[in-house]
Image (cartoon, rainbow, N blue to C red):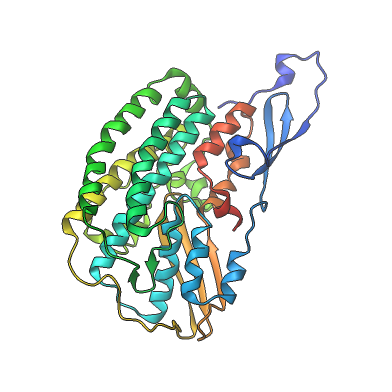
Length: 376
């Protein structure tokens, strides 16, 4: 997008830069994000995100909890994809303790994570469309997400913060009929995605709001530490499920979804395509689900040896990592989270410069932040 110079449009007018707060109580900031804007008329000359309004101190709280007690706290970080935080943490502990997780548990983790990924992307799709003036898509997405929440509730007993993974495996095996319910959803969702695709993608107003808006190159995305759809929407085909396969992803056949444009529309496309790939993984996982135990035999009192470890997974928002330091006791000495939303949000000043204020809503939506993930 070319820069707009108000002096060229109306040279007789005297203008000055206006400082304006957007948020933290603004519906399109998806939580409690405050953006300090420097405006030249309606043109953004600077946008500085201010975070910390949702800081929970959970990383510090973890130092005063046993390892199993940390898992419910991690659910609260990214409340739209809680299973990924659980997985990153338990994998870190398992690596320190050299625990061999049963194959059935690995498959269950893979299947449930992909269900959670689709649920998260449906929230992105619905709220993103709502921000741009398409409330029908919002209703459709939340209707379809309810099916996933029902499936996960039947398995875990919860709909949002699951506390399902355990150090060494999973808390419970699948209930009767779980595979059938998942397969019904796998057959149901492609038609609904096609319906949503038809409503949004071909709409001229939607495309005008998204094309060539919030552009970031692949090189800049890497330098800013972006990951997930933010990175893949700029043409960088990096996905931890392929680059460093964990759980059962090495046995799954799926594609890494990328687009080269690096704009808002590209990031929308990537997430739409990723949901279709997640359905393929779920179907393969259910077909290959082995029999056996769902939890390895571990001591009731978890005491990892002294040391440090960094475990990472591919969350719906990108690379989610947990840096864990153990002093040999039953409580972590230090837990530090590498949150993808934090790094992706840092690009906001670059993405919005010389755009209109109205474009800021589309850009923030395309980053797909969760403020609990940003602030922690």
